[in-house]
Each structure stands twice: as structure tokens, then as C-alpha cells.
Length: 190
Image (tube, rainbow, N blue to C red; front, side, top):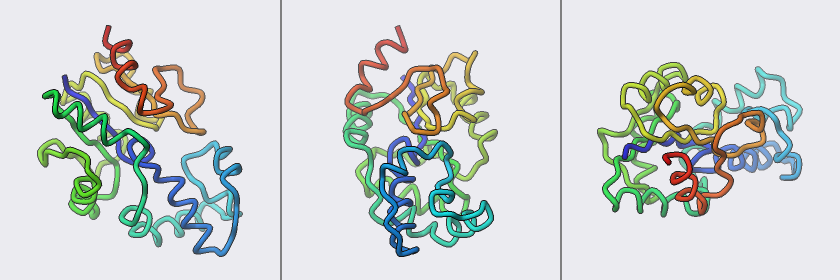
């Protein structure tokens, strides 16, 4: 089978990692209880920032956010390693900026995820991401963003949403914990 995965907030806990970095950089101590209630992908409002200030903070912090010690979700690496060992094709499809593609691919490899270079797609906008997913004719695709997943309804690709506070309105197969992935795949593909 062909499996596709987003990276940020699907395989790795990027927003939470950024939230902790913001706390540190801004010398604040906003609790994770507030983080868990943020209903947008963006986290700046929790810190009292405008959209412009939040965008600047994110852009100024990208290196730290993307390439420091951001943890993967428990079990995510092991699930993908097992899929690769079973002979499935694994594709990574991320909207990270083009300038970070090579560094992102190497970082993902260094974290222990199984990466085949030709199956690593990076540096596109969300609508381009959808074109790639359709072109690859993926059997299963996992992402956190409703804007991406909603456009795949009606295709042959089975979509799974990685549960996040900002995607609760989505009605599709929901991944709460990577330990349940294999069960979800059996249900989604049967």
C-alpha cells in the first residue's frame, strides 16, 4: 500500500514545541491547559500577539522550531518503521517552506523515520499538496489540517485526521494515539 504523511502536528508535536519556545523567548509561563484549548493552527493569540506579531515571531523562530529537539508523537516512528519493513511505500508531504526542504528531510531521517528521498515532498502550498496526494494515488493519507483533508473527500484515498484542538469539526477517521494506527487502517481500508 501507499501511505502518505504530513510531518508537523501529525508525526511530530510541532505546535506544542513552538508553544514552549515562545514561553521561553517571551519569558512567560503560559500553561499547557491553555495550549490545549487553542482552536487555530496558529498559537500567537495565547501570547497576546496580533496576527502580524505572531507571523513575525514564527518566521523569526523557524530554525529553532523546526530543527531543535521537537519530539515525535509516541509510537509514530515505530509505526512508520513497521510499515516500511512490511514493504509499504511511505511518502512524506509537508508544506514547510522550500528553503527548508533538504534540511527537513535530513532532520526527519535523523529522528529515525524511514525516508526514501524520492518519496519526500516539501515546499508546496496546501492546494499543491492535494495535487501531489492525488497524483501519487495514495491509499491512505494522514494530516492534521482540515483545509487539506476536506479536499480529499470523494477520492479513493482514505483520509485520517491526526487529532488536534483545531480540527474537532472534521468528521473522518480520527487518530488520537499512534498505538491505534494499525486498527484504524484495517477499518479504513475494509
